[in-house]
Length: 464
Image 1: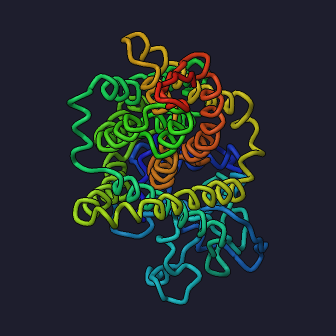
Image 2: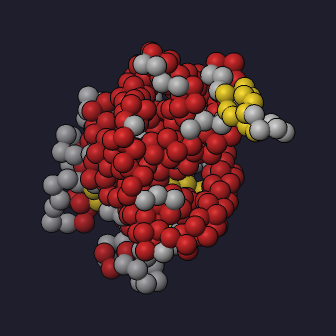
């Protein structure tokens, strides 16, 4: 995917020494992003590309490592390849290498037989690189350069992860569509209070809570893309997890499904709007609104419409197929969690960025969402039965959609450490724990009575 980096950095010119590792790699990434955006010396990209081709690669050391390809393109373009793009290899540790590419642009074409063949199409994947590495000096500044020996290979686990996240979203949204009819949305008009409050909590209160927490805990200043991840996960609609939890919580399942469907449709407007609103004043962040809208359309709205259309034309088939699609969604979710954790174990070593404060804040975000859902529901007199559904719908989100959006936009916004993805993924795991704890408290906080027949003809009331 062609990526135009819009991120603005803190530095206008390269420092005397730019190391390959860690935070220095992130600093170099910001410098190059700023140069590509025309806010610094745009000739820097050309000089680095030209310098990499003049180096004596026979003296370079060979290394095999896992990481990601990063591509920075100039916004204004140019007459030469050097002015248009620079390729970077980012090791999982954060080390950053400037990739020397061949003079011949055909070497980057798919099927060219070059180690660089089809390089642009590999930007979204985790890759295993085998490359020659060596330091170099360009106009008094030291950099680290790389040259590919073999074509980069995507690990099988990463392929499984990408496939599972797409399948999960597709099957879950089609399955949701199979359970819905156009008449189901009339609940918005016949019993609007619960759904309207749920929408306000989901797209109004929760992003505001994330913004406040992000500022109070220092993420906005210190780790801005963790802050963006918190906004992203709270600007995402609810998912089938909230429906499942509502079922086990003995809440109003019909209301939960209606709220999920309603918020899913509204997300096409509110998700990009809220991201742009709360991240507008962040110097390192520029949200690609069109990409967010396209992702929601392709992975959410279209499969939802497909499922509803199938139910409308073949209701019997839809009824029989619903359990199948639901099971596939659950299986894909389990695979997604396992593959996501196993393929990102290096994240847990970054304790400075993802420490106790980070984990605590993610848990607090989902759990407080459920507690405030209870508070606001009871303030306007909504029954405990419906409040259970609203509470869970407020705190639980479609984390798979958030992770997908984070993967697609991380390069275009300059998310060097993939913090948006990490935040969304961790939320997706922790929300289950928070949901179970909330359900445990519902019996005391939100007692509900249901009618059940006794052995005789009378009706006995049972507290649940």
